[in-house]
Length: 435
Image 1: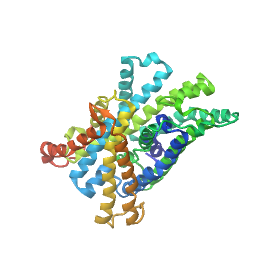
Image 2: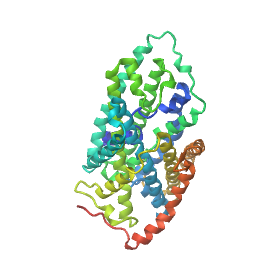
Image 3: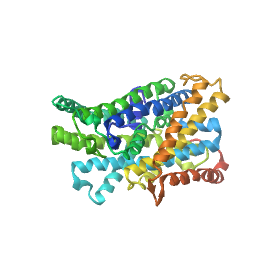
């Protein structure tokens, strides 16, 4: 992948446009927009600095798993991979859910009953086939999908600005959401700015990764902030009450402002978003079983690649796992996703600091700053993760609090490491097999 396809893939791994941010308006427009501006500063920017340094210094397949393994050893490297893959089970279930939500607004009968599950499984199968064509195909496709999904959003913004210009008073700015909506708004903002490290796992398939990773990340962060803030600000300018928004409401707003023709475009953009995000993240997550198998920590079959260099067995196994968790609510999915992802992110920040101490002469084409700054940049994301864990304490999944379930899932990691060592570790690292 070149620079633009890499940036587009990052965009889909993190954002995919304004679809899915509707629940942030539970806190009202002003609070929601402030969150969308503040969260990148305290959450995305420190993460981007960390990833920019480590991705340029260690541009290897497996990305963040390799960083943690090199800094902290194979045990913690395995925990990093386990937490990321466990988070992916719940993260990847979100995008087929959003796909069906928007498709149902286009034609409710299409997603009624068992049809919803059929569409979700069909999306997974489509993305499997796309991924088997290789990372360049996914990256190039991401560029086209980004243009396709953002076109109706751009039209909606223009219509909203024109509509708002004819209002005598813009009261929507001051409208408040429910106070209990603030916690959900923070979780939604964090989730919509989460996943910057995912593109690191395909480093062998990126042109000049030392140069392109930091540049692509800057491009993607800028794009994410703009596609979140501008549409919401336009809705406030157009006088749309924040209470009208819920997951999937962009189509309703488009219909009220311009008519059904734009609502259809928005719905189609929402389905493209679900497909694009699932497709790009499949490319990222499937490389983790590959590198674990190459390190002798998973069955050898997961290291098999096709002629395009795609770990096809790992793609299929991951897809099967993602298909098992498709029926949870959006809020419950992101709560558990943030808990597990946050634990893996803390390990990555720790790896950044440890590598500065243990390998000060490691070539770093991009540096996050001096040692003091490297130690400090993890503070804000960690505090935000603690807040997210507290805010989601009342969410329940599988009959227990999401926080407890997240802790239990994380606790399986050490057991999994020793079982993996016993089952496959004796043969040692293996080279990837090609089909």
